[in-house]
Image (cartoon, rainbow, N blue to C red; front, side, top):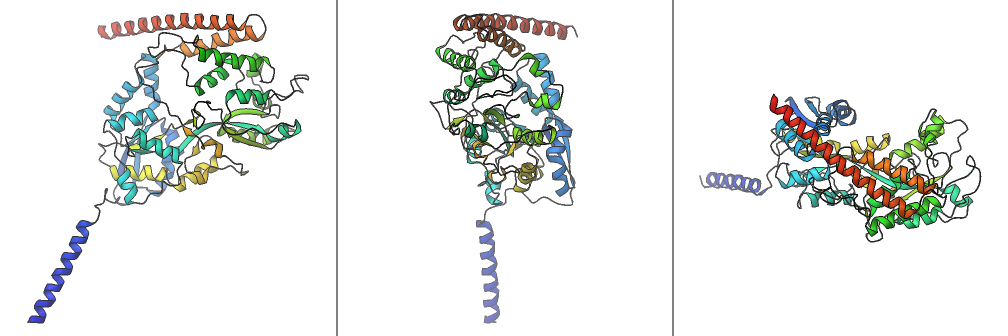
Length: 473
């Protein structure tokens, strides 16, 4: 009897110990996904076919019981551009109306929605499932944490970046030392000017040849690096008369005047053949020592070898895009356009997390690295091309990911088209020695201000007309 009582007591104690151990253990953040249960996930993405091509088809091969309802953002963007409505406000309404399980966000949207409690916090599930984030670019993870108020609310499978490509053969042939990481624009232009500017157009080379070899795109690149804005926060005043913009303007005009920087001619942008298409960027054809390009450009260099008769390939490398001397470890040439997050109100949280986990995992990164058709995977081990170039320049700097309040720096809908026309017309007059630098800058300031004022008037008239139209309904 005593032995039986002792045995029962021992069983009770063991049972209690197991229960206590279970209670003290960490509770699972999400129940496992039932492989037999059919689940429908609603996702916001650019466009339905593109979603399946990029992610959906791969995921459903692993989880055939999950189907998607894709809500296209393209329609929203079209409506916003036509109505002139604030995009962020329209996006908020769009999400509230459709209540997707999975959201595709840009950094500003991610920051806003996480601060408003609209996104499901991922730190706990990442920790519990030991999901590997160590191999993801640290700067990307830090940005997601910073913009999430210290927590992770989304993950980004890919990123885009611009770097400086350089032709190793041309540098060696001309006895010029190779480019280095973290050059300023001034250093880049000085390096470009060490190459000869003589010779017939069909034979000569350039120190720097941008794909879109116009003055305006180069000036905007320089201004962006220095965090300069065309307009003030109200969006009503052009501020090209500032000393910072004058310095950027003089730097670009002097560089182009030197003849070392390729200047695209009007007929060059009317590509008729594959060769004339590739020739729009003289770097592709071995006619420029340096150019600026994104990850997709490695693909173009490879394709040129196959599609151009008698093409002469060359050895190339990459260094970081130019930086500001005041902040040399930061770049504005790295961006995230697809931060995947789970709606805090989703009723399919586990399935939504499985999707986010899958497309941010190593298998998906491996597939993306083989395509090399656009953005790069955020997992460092898979950032490589078929020829094993060192591509660390794409991610070695800290991305700026500057946030601007959506109510600030707004401009009329037609402003950027008008801006480019004014810049090209006026800069050509200067580069063709038909007017001074001072007169050119003054003309640009005045014409852009006039265009800005007119643009706002036209937008206001359009909104007024639409309100009257709505009131009559």
